[in-house]
Image 1: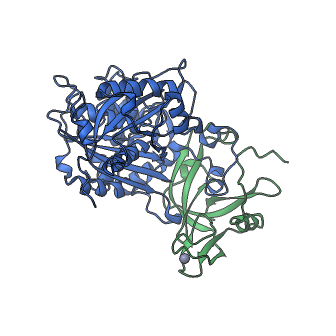
Image 2 (image 1 turned 120 degrees about the horizontal axis):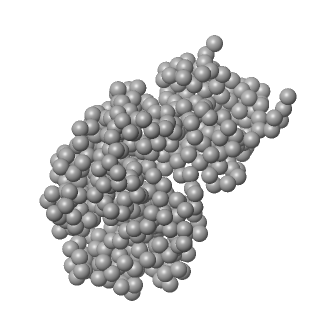
Image 3 (image 1 turned 180 degrees about the vertical axis):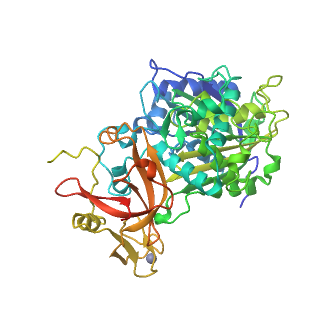
Length: 393
Length: 137
Ligand SMILES: [Zn+2]
């Protein structure tokens, strides 16, 4: 493969701080985010030739977004593979930039999941209105009351059965995320919690409790990706893309071992491309739709062996100062989760690599390399996995 | 005694019609490939393994074990909202493929991984009968 290391860089970011915005449209949140991310980079509307976005609603397609922004992008990518879409977008933007098709790409997302009252995890098929099922596979699944949390819960249940993972170990993930959220003034929930709080919260889908589940918020943001030539002249120090890996996992005609998730496929691709090892990674942004998502993802990314994730996440390892700090913004479990969260993984990884929080407890000391892994869809069923490895200049 | 079925109903297509016809007769059928010999689930018009076209319907033993499960306490979808708590499960059939289902006719607390189960059917409409699983007798 062509060496694509440092073929593109993240040069501008913006997180729309709203967690609740009933007075805004999704397009407005995206528009405000794109404008501020470009200002962060020191670039203008005319510099952008690539537009990348994902949405679960057709009305928020790339067409409508280009219309709203009054842009005429020459390269458009609406890859929508759930929450991990934005790690795929970064991978695709890298390729398009390296091929010389574009110089500057904007990746953006927004959602009004909270003010719209979307029951992301527990709505079942009925959350989108009257369900007319597709002949396959929905007609063999939705008859049984599938929910997103239910699918993850089945993976958690089997993980416990095979490896002795405990509810208390899963709860450690929530506790660490809340600890980080306590240092993020924008996080929705910032009061510290304990393992007892998590395992004592209401059971949503056994063995997952309310506090094993991510929150539902509004929100949005944007990331500006540029070629090395452009990046060198931006306001901000570039954050380089070293490696990317994409994967889809599914039931494999009823035979796949569902305990191995898409990260198992995408992670080796990203590490091989980047030419770095797990020991080189200073912090990770790991999609935390549910606590079990983090345990499974860390195992399949290769940070620990299959089955050892419960022990790995315990004892404060995931906190800043621990062996592998993750989700230093508080994650989807405590900071924000507007339907899909993959974009926010790129935002916080960039902040860490910029050393934006130097002098505070949120900064991972001397952060040089960060990994982000987005998961979309549902473990236990069809899902995506996008791994990216980013480096400080 | 009839109550209207308010849970989602399957949409029947050409490639899945034989499955739903069999359910109506109280038989669980799955597909096997004549070319490569592999079973597959869910039903489809091609072999998912070798991409051949010679898939054949065969009757499953209807027996299997619980591969994993969850007791669901919250689902906003009509039909299930009133049914909580219910058991959502993946059952591994004796033929080696795993399918989503509900484990019914038992206390949710009694369900466990590895539990032997067998197919049972419920009539949803005159056209549609749905397979479920219950503890093996
Ligand atoms: Zn075949």
